[in-house]
Length: 595
Image 1 (cartoon, rainbow, N blue to C red):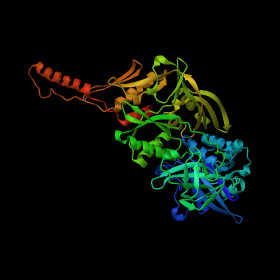
Image 2 (image 1 turned 30 degrees about the vertical axis):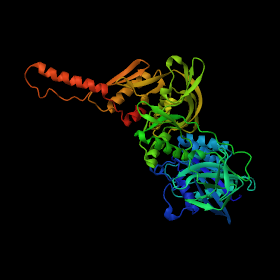
Image 3 (image 1 turned 90 degrees about the horizontal axis):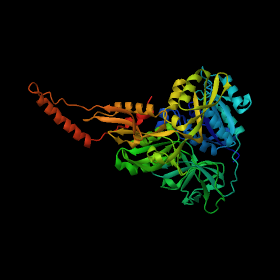
Image 4 (image 1 turned 120 degrees about the vertical axis):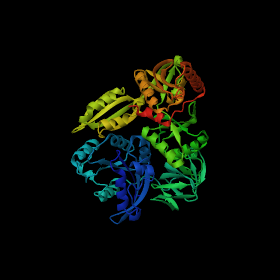
């Protein structure tokens, strides 16, 4: 065990985690030159296309220092705030972390939040300044920021470049010298923490674990503590570029187990594996249940695909434990699921993965957050969907979730960022200079206001410099109203939203204008209305497509023309009674980008 080191890589988006991981694998010759490619650990097409890491990936490397052989288990983690749950799981399986900071951008908001998570878990932090080969690099300035943040010595900070490979040998040496070996007793009863799982159509569910205590052998009968079910360990092994089977793994190691489990509900991330013959007395702690922040309805385009969608979501949930879903139905869209996501990027990625990995075409409704509704008797219900709101006469008040947002930016962009946050009903808590020209702003804001387009706007007004991180702080009473969209007098429940009373009229008007552009013209007029309760606050009309029925009638008495027009009018009226309005998928998405 003294020769094992488990560590993860944490950083903000685009600070070069995956590229640096590639260099570590190259130097330790874990990946041969012919298999080497960019972002070698990112195995989803989507990750390579977008250049982001969505899943944390584990891989084992062999390394020799001063004639001694070491085993290094690396877990590469995502940097985006929507995937911070993945980071928390990786941190739980490690003893140390490489904190990577971009030499040209300095410390960003996500770097700080991931760092605090690592410090809470008592991880040994190795600070690394990446991209030191760039012309725009400011290593001295960034070193000052790291010293301020961590309180470490300057000589502890390693300068590196994932592109050229500079500093990589020093990083490997520091991992061995500074990160402690895993603690644990190989002779104690087996106790292993599941930190990830994937679904394989041929082998069933593969669970990734870290052994805290004891040993596990191939063929051994093991038990999952949370549900008490027993399985044979058909195959265990370590994670290289591919899975490599082993006969036995002992405490401190990271590996995988295949036991022919077919149903996804039986494997829970954060669960403990133990032996049936010699079980451990308690499960491993340190995993909180994830709380989704953004809710949206996901519906199959074809109603017959409902069961397939359920199966696809269950398989995705294995791979991404932060996704939650429950069945719901909508008048406009039929049967589907109300899904909970950690943020908008997370929602977009899940939608994309449903299409790519499971060939599911889905419609996603307008995202919203969960509210606490208090009735006049003092009972509380949690509402994830505007259509689940009780009658307005019964509601005493509604509370919405507030977040504590941290924005780190250059001082030049303070004005526009303040304006943006205040327009989203934000309250400034504090602002302070971190170093030089960089400021940290802390706001309390309603989560519902940042769900839709806040992040995109923040990036564009700060030219990509501002970084944003948040956590939910509490629920506060708000003056919220339910805004309904009516098409020809029929409410479209999938487009209804809860919004603040002050914004409702403006929002309703913009929505009607946007829908007028998107809904195709029919043979009859379509009235698009926005309503609060029985009060209509905005209206637009999609004009009918008219055929010129009087073209063949030239000259003669006016009554001949009128007869033809009356006949057409009667046909339109009949059509309007039986005709339905198709709302295209673009219309649901357009609400997200109203500005």
